[in-house]
Length: 114
Image (tube, rainbow, N blue to C red):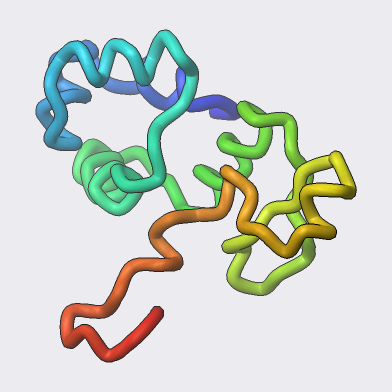
C-alpha cells in the first residue's frame, strides 16, 4: 500500500470508507479520485483501518502524502515539517503546505501546542 488510492481500495466500497472516517460519500470519492486524504482525517482513518484489520501508521500516511506531493521530508523525529524541493520555500521559514496540521492542534486542556 503505497498511495492513498491503494489504501481506500482496501475498503469494500467508497461508501463504507466514507462512513468509517465520518465524511460524506462525495468527499470520500474525491479523496480517492484526487489520491489524497487530508491530514485532519488521519487520526480517524488510523482507527477505522485498525478496526478493519488494516495496519496503518502516521508514518505510512506521511510517506503516502510525500509521494502524492512529490516533496522530500526534512529530518525531524516528529516528522511534522516538510521542505519543498524549491530551496526558496525553506529559506522563508514559512510552513510549507504539507506541514502536518495535526501537529498544530491544541491539547484538550488548551495549554499550548502539542
